[in-house]
Amino acid sequence: MKILALILSLSFLVFIHELGHFMFARLFKTRVEQFYLFFNPYFSLLRAKKFDGKWHLCFFSRQAPEEFSQHPEKTEWGIGWLPLGGYCSIAGMIDESNTSADSLPAEPQPWEYRSKKAWQRLLIVLGGVLMNFIGAIVIFSAMLFVWGKETLPIQNVTQGYDYTETALKNGFQNGDIIVGIDGKPVTQLSDALEQILLDNTKQVNVIRDGKKHNIDIPKDFAKQMLASQATQFATPRFPFVIDNFAIGSAAEKAGMKVGDSITALNGVATPSFSDFVKEIANKQGQEIELTFYRSGKEQTARIALGADGKIGAVCKNPALIYKTEKTEYNIFESVPAGIVQGCETLTSYVKQFKLVFTKEGASQLGGFGAIGSMFPSEWNWIMFWNMTAFLSIILAFMNILPIPALDGGHVMFVLWEMITGRKPGEKFLARAQTIGMILLFTLLIYANGNDLYRWLSSKF
Image 1 (cartoon, rainbow, N blue to C red):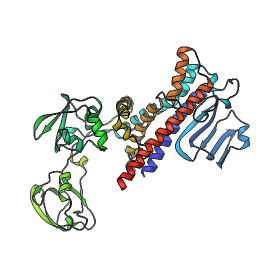
Image 2 (image 1 turned 120 degrees about the horizontal axis):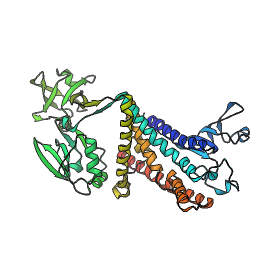
Image 3 (image 1 turned 135 degrees about the vertical axis):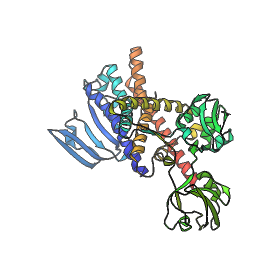
Image 4 (image 1 turned 90 degrees about the vertical axis):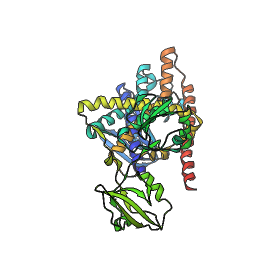
C-alpha cells in the first residue's frame, strides 16, 4: 500500500510539474516535442500523438512510428517504464532530455525555446515550480474545505508526553507538558518541535507534577536528534482503556470488558499505556494480576499469559480519549487558509534544509524508501493528500535550487543573461547540464544508499 501511494503521489506531482512547463511553452508558441510521465530509456509503454484530427497510439515501442516524425509541430505524449520522474522536451532547450548542443539546428527557429525573449524563457522554466506550489495550495485548501482541521492541543493531553531518549538526556522527563518556548505560549506539539529544532530555542517551559519547570536547550540539540535517528520527539501518554478484544483474548476470558481502564500490573502503577507495555515486557507464560477501574470502582483480574505475553486487548485511540479542536472552513475561508498553510509549510522546510549541510543531517538523507515510509500502511485519503501536498512543496523548493539540470539552474542562467545582457553559449549550457545530471545522480545514489543501509541495519 505504501508503494502504491508513493507511485500515485509522485506521478501526480511529476505530471503537474511538467504541465507547468508545457502550458507556458505553448503560451509563448514554443514547440513541445515530448511530454512523458516516467522516463523511457530504450522503450516506452505508450506513445500518443494527435494529428489529422485523431489520436494515434503506439504501445510498448522502442521508437516512435515514422508517421509521428511527419508532424514535428505536434507533441508526443507518453508513459515510460522507469518511475523516477518525467520530462517535458521543449524544442531548442538543453535539459535532461537533450544534453547536446550539437543536436540543435545551426540557427534558432522561431518555435524554439532559445529564440524566445528572456522573460518568456524565465516563465517557461519557472512553470513547473509554480505549478507544484500552486498545486500544494489547492490540495491544502480542498482538504480544509472537505475535512476541516482537527488538532490536539498540548495542554489537553493531561498525562503529558513520553519523550525520545535524546530529549530525556537533555532534561525532559516523561509526563512533561510543554506550555511555552522561551517564555512564549505554545499550543501545538508540531509548532513546539519546529521551534526547538529550527529556531535556536534556548529554553522550553513545561508543567511537571503540577509545577512549572524550565529546561535549557543546548545549541546542538537538533544535531543530537538527527544523530539519534529518532522518528518522533514526543508521543502522548494516555490511559489503557480497553476498546475491543482479540479473538481468544486472555483478558476477556478473565472477565474484563470494553471500557475497563487498567491502572496497575502486579501492584505496580501503570497510569499510561506506555507504562503498561514496559511493565508487561518479558512476562510471557506468567500469571499476572491487573488492577482496573470499571464504572468508577477498582477491581482486579488474574490472567495467565501465553507464549506471546499479551492480554489480547486493544487500547482505545487517544484521539477519542483527549479533547481535540476542530475548525470548519467554507469555500471562501479555505482558500486563504490553504495559502497560509502552503507558505508555512514552505518556510518550515526551508528552515529544515540547513540541517542537510551538517554531518548528522547528511547521514539522514533518504530516497524513495524514506519517502514511501512516510505514507500509512493502510489507505487513508487525508494522509495521502496531506503527504502529496507536502511533497509538492519539497519538489518546488528542490527544483528552484541553482543547480544545473534543475529548473533553478536554468533560472540562474536566464537571470544572468537578463542582468548582464550576455547569453551563455549553448556548449557551455550543455556541459553545465551534464555536470548537473552527474551531481543529481550521485545524490540520488547516496540518498537511496542510505535507505538500503538503514534497512540492512534493521534486519541484521
